[in-house]
Length: 373
Ligand code: SF4
Image 1 (cartoon, rainbow, N blue to C red):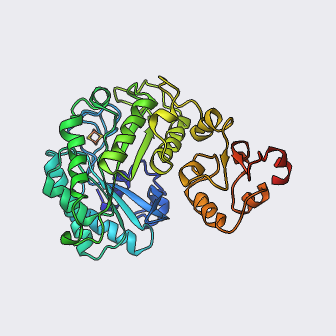
Image 2: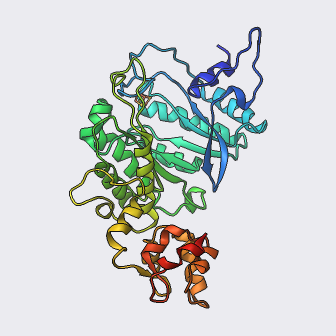
């Protein structure tokens, strides 16, 4: 099989563009499943590339699981690095997410991923590089990944061993996944300069949502722990979609809205000072609303609105419509201005939904709602 065809297959659900008689498809984004992702502070086209779609494990949700009847392809590290370099030089991609099925053990697979990344960097590749850490990767391998990548990830898949067992019976939550993530987190606490970096790459993980019976509370409790104890930058929530010919093929897909709610809750945990308990009803297992911040404000700020002119940053961030940037703008403007009208807030980009939860110089602004528009 030609290298180009392998790349199409290994890059995921490619929308192949093979006209009859076309011997060599042109290198263009049309023939590859390019994703757009935010990296290094901006949106860029990224190729999700697998070194191999052969895997010796049997995760119940995965199209590459062992024993599933599907065509497998494998790249040699130099071969894949060469394709990525070519796509980068032609301006098709600006970044790559490098992952792999596990073949010949995690350590050996990680070595091949590292070799691919090292070849890329030696060849002068300066694009964005997200490198997957295999379950049970060794300390020196993780360190090498941290030297080479802009982002590294260990996918925990489930919030705890009980749920993981339903999804991936051969993966060990504590001994493989969390241990690898903890090793990466510990290495990131070292000063990066002795290892040739001005700063370490970010560390992220992913949960599969909706296939193991896990609740929002389970997911958010682990999210908070990963943020606070392991210093993760992002947690991704991949809503479950059944894959034919897998043990979970008859399970219904998870609704996208659940994933969106979890992402909103994630940012409230990471950037707004909320705790898991604050985002859920007492004893509740599911996020109660699509907008968890608005739900919290309805419970707490309707009766006790926030005085915009004197509230500290952490209270401003609790107001719907006020995020870190708008809070900073408010704090800056407050040095010289007393806010008395909604129009003044509107000038800072603060939307109408903040009005029921604030005071402006001691007065509720609800009666000024007309002016907002
Ligand atoms: S280890 Fe990865 S590639 Fe292999 S079956 Fe599990 S999720 Fe799929």
